Image 1 (tube, each protein chain N blue to C red):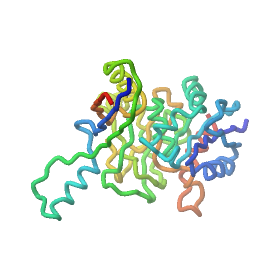
Image 2 (tube, rainbow over the protein chains, first blue to last red):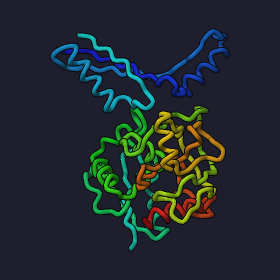
Image 3 (tube, chains in turn orange, red):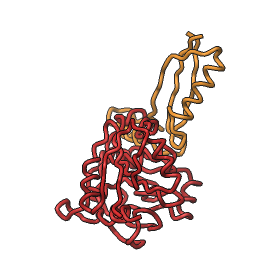
Image 4 (cartoon, rainbow over the protein chains, first blue to last red):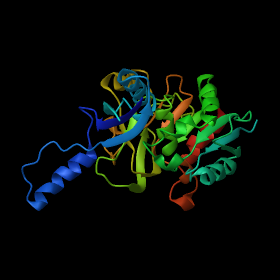
Amino acid sequence: MQFEAKIEVSPRDGIANPEGSTIERSLPALGFEMTRNVRVGKLIRFEVEAESADAARSLVEDMCNRFLTNPVIEDAAVEVLET
Amino acid sequence: MTQRVGVIRFPGTNCEFDTIDAVRALGGEAEILWHSDSSIKNVDAIVIPGGFAHGDYLRCGAIARFSPVMEAVSDFALAGGPVLGICNGFQVLTEAGLLPGALQKNAGMKFLCSMQQIEFVSTQNVVGKGSQVGDRLQIPINHFEGNYVCSPEVLSRLETQEQIVFRYTDNPNGSIKDIAGICNEAGNVVGMMPHPERATSDLLGSNDGAALIQSFLSV
């Protein structure tokens, strides 16, 4: 079966996010003073072949742990959708 | 015996010739080791130089870690061989798990290129021979991702096991505890963001990096 994997990579809680802080400081210049806690991460998407959604998820989580994210500074939220 | 230093070159590495020149100027021998070779050719020491290995795609050092040569580098390091990672090389060593922690974007979101003063915190490692704790050196930095982070547990281990090698006297990038360089427990693997190979002659603005490379060549 074919699945679409989406991995939202975000900086771990407690880890400073200089990109987010810089954007947060810039938004008021456009009048958006109401924004707080801006965090910048990244989205990784790909197609994956597996026997079931659980199997696909387990593969993707393994990829995250071993390569796609650095657990010292990043968290991963994995989403697997049947296509 | 003259030390034969292997300088690893990945696609995107750009400090390999500066490193080779510095090693040769200080009496060592040096040769390039290509990242896709699985052998390190019986060299006595290894430098992973600065640059943008594999374009720094995904994360700095994340892809370099899977280059075939890294398995041999890892075996060499675990067997006690001297390994020095400079700048991008430091990032590669953390991604490869040979050094703890990680390097993230500078706190000020600026690429930093400047002469920096650093201080020896521990000399029990391959770059510390002949130096004293507290020695201050002028060594240039040249990075966007030099902001060292690690968990509180790792930090306390680094402190108690004398694994913090250098600290900045005026922290330029937000590194935790002003850390500019660390080593592994055994002291044979050192990673540092400043570039000692660019401080090996007064003509370059500082000769303070020479002591570190000399130490590295003599272990």
